[in-house]
Length: 305
Image 1 (cartoon, rainbow, N blue to C red):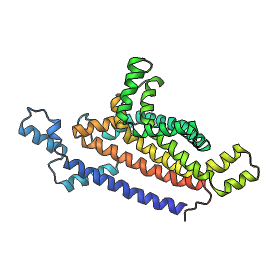
Image 2 (image 1 turned 60 degrees about the vertical axis):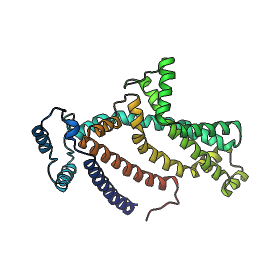
Image 3 (image 1 turned 135 degrees about the vertical axis):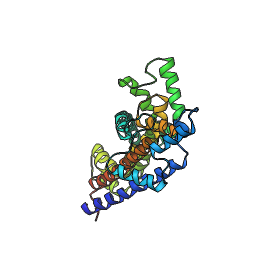
Image 4 (image 1 turned 45 degrees about the vertical axis):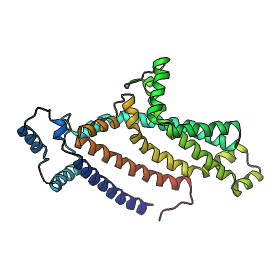
């Protein structure tokens, strides 16, 4: 296991390096930040002074070398718009995004897994039909449309929940449902299909014939063997929720990292975009390593050598 984790850690480093190089090159191909950051009436000398102060007049390879060396020391530069360290701004917004992402994932797990299990146990019943229709709608409905509908119905018409900003639990309800609906539908379908595969297996019929109690049969035999694909989706969806949160945070004016990144892209605020993308890459490779560890805990047959 130790050797496997070391290999994965080395591979993760190369992934993050590749992401850093890619985002740096793409950003510098999008145009000159001076065209956005400087006022329309700025003189040629002022624009040239801005580009010189930010180092944009240097060769691209020199800029990347300076960026890479600073990033290794945890310094991603100052935001062009805010004038503050980019890493500090991203970490300041991170708790709001984490709160929203974990709430959406928790809602998806609590709702989707029990319904998926019941739908598999009651295959072709009314419950199974309703669950499949709900999963189809959840994966088909655009996030922005769902968010707007929730705002109009529960925020404007009924007035039950706030429609913007961050605050108490009431502010979290509508964004959580909007962000977690797709994951909920995906987990529900996957849980149902995984349980159906396990329920048809020979070892489960043998355990049933031996008189194993239904609850123990479900928990210790069926659900335990259906966990691997479910855990994989839960891990990948946790990271995917950060990218999917861009629309949700924009609709509900949620002060998270995704909303900060969107504004930074519009402003061509290179340091903010670079630090957000690299943090997302670190989260992705970290979650994937945790999934590999959970595999060996959930299934003793899995060994890494």
